Image 1: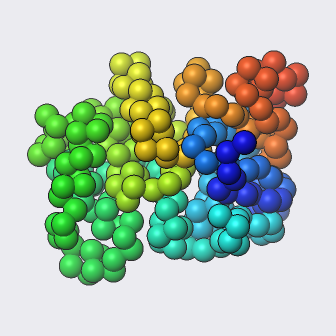
Image 2: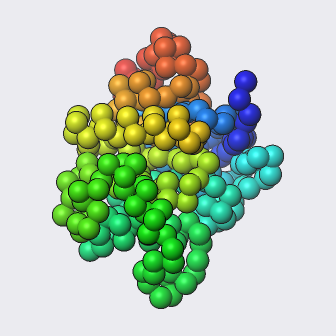
Image 3: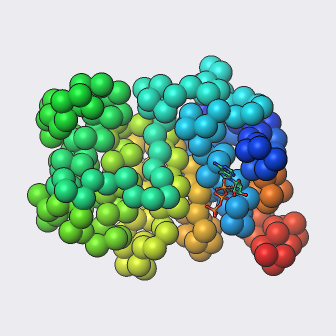
Length: 248
Ligand SMILES: Nc1ncnc2c1ncn2[C@@H]1O[C@H](COP(=O)(O)OP(=O)(O)OP(=O)(O)O)[C@@H](O)[C@H]1O
């Protein structure tokens, strides 16, 4: 069995009286594409935020390569090779596709210089061009991101998360609002980056077909708890999963 990269142990997050994540545990293994699904409001985004340091878990631990990284800041997680996308696009509409990628590369390096002095190439243009070629965005490289279709912006957003050559990327609803053609393209590119570079993904997604096709393993949450875990086929047939979805 592949090596475990990330261990999420009994993670809990409360907001006042609301328990958004209630003691969730799972492992992420090297090279896998793990899906996290569940009905609206079941705690998926909160869980990502607790893993990547946007939020401090109320309880529990996050362990990366055997090291306790619970509550480390996002920039520290980036430095350790863990990156993410957000549900809402993070692209800068006034910057070109290439400039957005360069800026993302600077952010991943955690250079305060980029924040103080704005966009500098700092040798990242070749990396940006490699990413542009990989995601087949060459014809759009010098276009302002704001002029791209929503699907193209989602693709750029995903490409930005890969600028640091991370070992693990957490994708928050990559397929949301993307049309079928772009979705096929995104899926094919994610598969390729997983196969060619051994990148590990954790994907939160509402589009069940997309998850079932792309993911090798799926964790199902409902009301802040893990209710199932297994291959797409196992999860689809699990009565607790069917109940959680039909009950909403
Ligand atoms: N900052 C916050 N303050 C208070 N409650 C919050 C906060 N963030 C999330 N919640 C609550 O925690 C629960 C889980 O929310 P979360 O966004 O993690 O779910 P989700 O599964 O990602 O939802 P969706 O599928 O709609 O994106 C919800 O009841 C939500 O209202």
